[in-house]
Every structure is written in C-alpha cells, then in structure tokens.
Length: 102
Image (cartoon, rainbow, N blue to C red):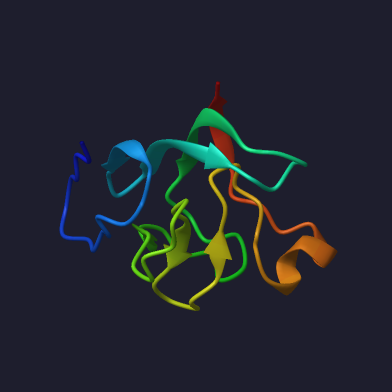
C-alpha cells in the first residue's frame, strides 16, 4: 500500500511502501540496491534539493522504476531509497539530507 500526502505522482510499479510526502520531509520504505545488494530499508529525508537549495521539490517514482526513487521536480535528479544521487551526483557526493534511517 502506498500512502501519499500532497499532490504528487507515484507509480504502482514500485515495490516501496510507507510513502509520505510533506512540504518539509519525505519518507519511503523500499529496496536499497545502491550498497552492494538488495535489502529493505526506510529513509526519511528533508524535502529539500541540495543543489538548487529549494524546498518541496521531491516526488516519488514518477518514472515508474521497479524499486522506486525520489525525483526532484526542479532539475529531474534521481535519488535511490538511501538518498544517494543515481546520476553523476554520486561522483560529487550529492545526497538528500537524511533525518532518519532504518
């Protein structure tokens, strides 16, 4: 089950659950594949773009990836469930600002 707060897009193709979005914080539970294997985790992050310095830009999985991802509406950067940028940002240590991780 996916729970959404606010007006955002979400894909039913995603395996994530517990998706919550507010203007200041986002949470999702899903598969993390960016750390050498797949495992379930829950990440809560500030709803903040560390590159453009804008708040409220994250949406959940608008591209319909199987494991799900956070995408910034203002610059289309994608982040895995662990908050790491999935594009060139990983080379520059671009991460979402984490507030909780389990």
